[in-house]
Image (tube, rainbow, N blue to C red):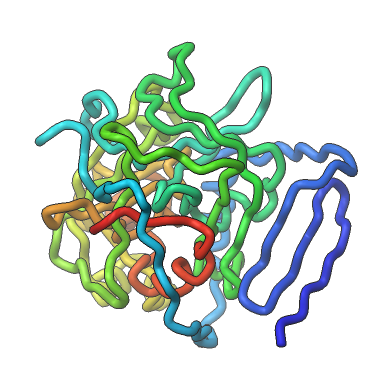
Amino acid sequence: MKFIIVVFLGSLLVICTQSSYVYEPSSVGNLQPDYSAKNAKQQNELFANYFFNFSQPEVKYNRPHKTECSTKCYCGTPNVNRIVGGTQVRQNKYPWTAQLVRGRYFPRLFCGGSLINDRYVLTAAHCVKNNRDQITIRLLQLDRSSRDPGITRQVARTIIHPSYDSTRIVNDLALLRLDSPVPMTEKVRPVCLPTANQNFEGKTGIVAGWGLITQGGVTSNYLREVSLPIITNQECRNTRYKNKIEDVMICAGYVKQGGKDACQGDSGGPLIVNEGRFKLAGVVSFGFGCAQPDAPGVYTRISKFVDWIHTSTRDSCYCSG
């Protein structure tokens, strides 16, 4: 038997279930705390220094049923064949890459995300834990300074992983249900999810986003990408992070020299790997500064959460992988 508790908190209708934390906007009022992407990154760095060392209880889910879209579509296909130190991306190359913005008259980017099916965007829990109201999702907007917003959707519901720990930054994952489905077309496609426990270590990952171009600099108007080597968790533990790195995390970056990395504003965005189709290996979670030596980027390892994702998104459809 599943219990549901409904509580009003300010302008939020909070629905607590056994399997997740679900937040739905209500009409009680407006709360708009100023949680900027930069502050979120700084908080992440602070949290990283104060991890507690104890095991996270495993959350098990029944094997979910995944519904394929009636319109034939394929995930993980870029629109063009083919970030600090990054290269500008050609038009709509990664159509699943999403902007999370807030503010009606002066929209401001605060995090990234990934479209995973026709109804849900996957992002980092730290992006939305204290910033749940009035989030707009933008897709296919290559240039943020353009008057063309691309495809826009409002977030109707926020689902934060039930074992998310903001102090240790583990299970840093959230699902954003859109207010209406995104039609799958030749230009709009979701990223592919990995198989459960799929290992990407030793492969090259790509991070794409609109975050700061340099540490302490300005955000990019254009979607940028950077290629990074994915390292083992043991290699990551040999850096300044030490035993803060857990199995639900994945690390990528140049450990010795730094120079390339995700940065403020990229949080929640995708770390993808090309295996014929692009698969979502990780979600940008935290790091020590941007592109610093001995401090690779740390991401949420998506292959550890595939069952939870499918279970939580049963009201959506997936493209073929």
